[in-house]
Structures are given as C-alpha cells and as structure tokens.
Amino acid sequence: MVARGLWLAGLVMPRRDAAGRRAIVQAWSVQMLRRLGVQVRVSGTAHCGAVLMAANHVSWLDIPALHASAPQARFVSKSAIAHWPLLGRLAHAGGTLFIERERKRDALRVVHEVADALRQADAVAVFPEGTTGSGDAVLPFHANLLQAAITTATAVQPVVLRYSEPGHSVSIAAQYTG
Image 1: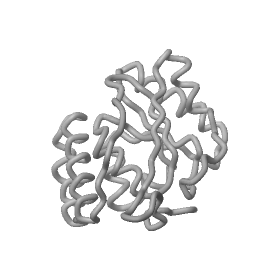
Image 2: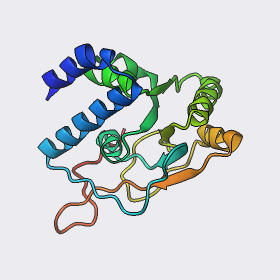
Image 3: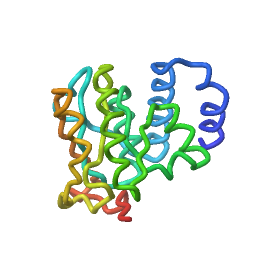
C-alpha cells in the first residue's frame, strides 16, 4: 500500500490534472480503508460545488474517510504534513492548503487561500477544533477559517465523524488524541 502510494504520488499524479489527482487520492483512500477493515457510511446529502465542510477530528483516518466520501474536497492541514514522505506528496496532490499553526498570522493567509478555493467552486474541509479529540465531545473551535465561507457567502456543511464497532456505539480503536 505504501509502495503504491509512493508510485502514485511520485510518477502518476504529476502527469494528471487536479481532477485526476483527486480521483487517485480517492481511490487510494478507499483501498486503504478497505484493507484496514474500515467501512464508511454517509448519512444525509453532501452539498455539491463550493462548500466549506467543518468536521470534528478524531483520528488520522478522518482524512481518508472524507476523501473516500467527498473526493472533491481539499483540506487545510498543519504545515508539518507537507514534509512527510508519502502523506506529504499525497496531500500536495490532493490540493491541500497548509497552515503554519505556530504563526498566528498565517491563519489570515490561509483564510484568503480557502476563500479563493471556494470562489473556484472547490469544496474545502477544515477541522475547526484544530486537533484530534476522543469524539465523545466537541472541542473548542478555532473559528478563523470559517471567515472564508462568510466572505464568499458559501454554505458551511457540518460533518460528524464517528467510529463504531460491533457492540459499541463509539470505537476507541480509531482515536488518536494528540
């Protein structure tokens, strides 16, 4: 799976347009989740076109789960991920917008980038909590990035991510608190 991801990110994706790259990221995400035994179930109707998706953040599985169900979505992610060997390449290929969280003023730059993406009819996913939590409660929001939706008069779609397993309404196996 890792070797395939490196091959896709290094050789195949650079030759594709944005839609082609996102399709590859979606397929890779679906395949990875399937191999891990994770099934994605979507309730409700996804908003088409420009939308700011605001999701809680439970696990490193959140991004592949969202890519599997909303392949058009771009993400806002901490800048450190841009430098990770495989995931950094996949994130770049998927159109991720990176934020330097340690620089408070960088949020303004990213708000402008998100607004530009929304004006181009992109879907952008953010985790307003800014970190992962256990999933049993919503953490305080860092609302700066929601300004992009206000500025562009774009819909905000709430997204709830929850991991369950047989006999339990919430699975702690997927949680990554950090």
